[in-house]
Length: 422
Image (spheres, rainbow, N blue to C red):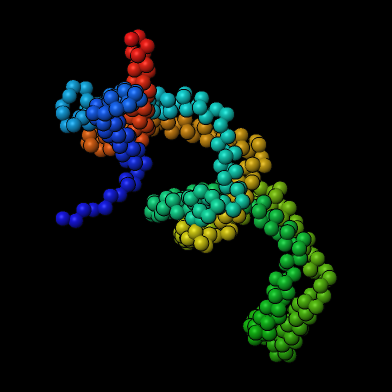
């Protein structure tokens, strides 16, 4: 039969438990050895006293530590396997502890008072080389980007899309369009952006004039009597009308300072001023806005914008760590810098975050407490034992080691006292 090679335990708890057990076995071997060779040397009684007391202390602490989690040696000794036997009470006590110390609105408000949550979040966002909202963990904490991307994917429902469309339409209805149009007209005129449009319009008018000559001649002919047509007056009138319009359009196109151009600019500025100050002038613009919002095509366009924006944001947030989206990183870094630079904004955000936390605790605190208690009750005794032993078992093994060594020291002290009394 081939023996397997010995391997040290992998977890710190199991390594510490092995050390405490080996120390206890060492004291037992030492004590047994001194029983046979006690008279071989004057120092051996001291060694025996140390080993005997250490063995007693180590066994007592082994029993106490083991009794917390299971029956020592499998014997159903009363008041052992304390944690498995009382797991429901432990779950209720843990839930009560959370409720009394963390999940009560007044307690949470008191604990959050003076805590700069917004400042900490802003510093995290603005930290150079630490893009927290991407998947890059190179110089900072693991990114939240993939997590936020998953949350956004959960919003991928028709209901959310309808909410976005309805909310956008409501905001558009509440927004006054006339002042925006007036500002756009003034900006266009100030920057001379209307000139290319006007030149293109003049070129189009000249082309349409050449293309529609026959139509103009027919219109003039229909409006003259037979006598004028008999002497070709209608033809001359048509020619003069066409040439006059062509001459005017050509002059306006060739002269950037033509008076009609200036009059057009004056008219546009006057219209912009009316849109700002005259309720009657605003009515057609606002009516056009309402008709546009009520058009189903606009709703479809808004819906497509939402779909595209959501897909693009998910793609950027879910980018691999090796290729984070620099624009997204810069955007969130700018947000962090803005919050850091504005104390009033930071104070306002802290107030809102505290109110949000207290509100969530007030609404869901009891549910969280019940969830903790129900979860612990749902665990079997072995699961509870393993979880708690993994959490505190390493420190308990230190207690065994300390008990063994301190017991040995007490044994030396008692042996010295016995010798002194004799």
